[in-house]
Image (cartoon, rainbow, N blue to C red):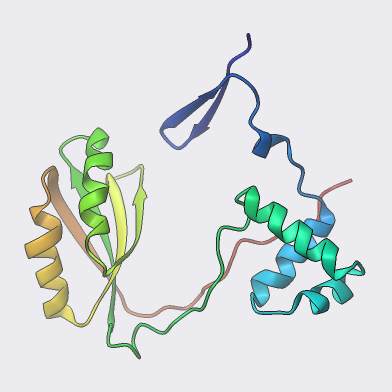
Length: 177
């Protein structure tokens, strides 16, 4: 029996057969649909169908298939944190006693609603988190009373974002023939 290993960052995943999601092909029509819905997730399917030159049913089927394959992982609204009272956007490099403690630390971080992203990284930090605070005092409370109190956290380095210049999704290129 063949065994297939796929590496995602520092994690190895083993399969006895090639997983279905690696066998499913995303074709140029799927890529065109993705380009359209990534610009506007609220666009009606009929408009996507017209732009792609296919039926509305085909659009629904393809979008559902891409959701089932985790190509499309969600949709929603983007909100402006500053208008909601969160004026300080911060990136925090977190160091742990051991990198393997990452799995133990993440559940603690999930309990802090101001944290909007968490990444297990290479480089000078074990983890990089992004959070929004109301102000610097709130940020200090989050650091001193919550993040730095998590078992296994040995240090943090805080980088405050002064301005947000670019927000975009990954580019979707046509498949080469």
